[in-house]
Image (cartoon, rainbow, N blue to C red; front, side):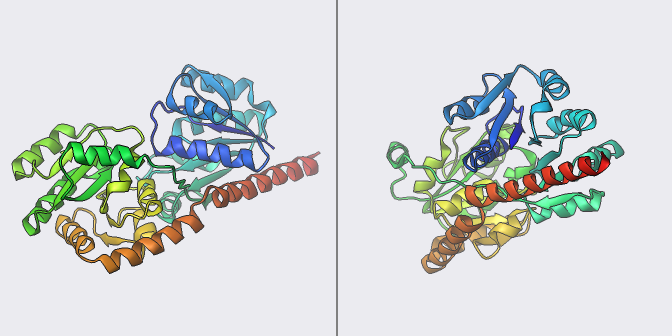
Length: 357
């Protein structure tokens, strides 16, 4: 089967990583996979390193032209961003190609045009039940859940150890998060939780990896609460997974979260997780970590404290979480789910064409 994967984001975040995993997984199952993405951005670079067939374009206008002129050769179009879904609708209208869109965010869509766009898409994939419910409530008819992939890497533990020594954190317990400093990650609740934790104990360091528009606001809150000595902002760091090797607890404070792929990373590297119940987090962390309500900094602080104090609980949770992520989020199982879906859609298209003729 000839599959076109489409993602024209400039960033290298969860959605782009997942696009690469999807392309690799489907290629391993014997499909011809082509990736349409922006020239010279990370996704194009990494895809080429993994020998994926890449078509590089300069902007979204080019993406639209490609959809109108070049998609005839493909059996399936799989778009991974909302703007690409819009472009691909044209190819569905003109060439009747099955169009799949994977949605990874859990905020509520708006407007009749958006609903039309969704219901004109052959299949909308939600990466969690939480997203599926939001879409169905909005009126989307054709939703199926296929989750995201978690793949462990060989960690550079020396790099992380060096960081600890360099900053003289050897005697500290390390609590951390990898999250952009943006509103839906709710970093202010996180800062307040760490402040509350600092009133309970003084044997830890909190490390934040990630950058974003709320940086100034977060810095101000850290300053105001007087926790500069225990809260370190590291900004955006490449190969951030290396730092999972030094973490005692991983924290997620989001108030919106499609799934929480960095939590899946924590599961893979056997780091205990304290998170809020935002969106898909509730599904993956319940039973595998400690969950608290969104915006409740007291409960989040208590859960972090519990994990730092209770070694047996941590062992039990990390064991369960590791089993869960290996079974439910391997590239093999997710690729197979897409493979079955794509084959069915192509089959349906063949039969509908056959009977129309």
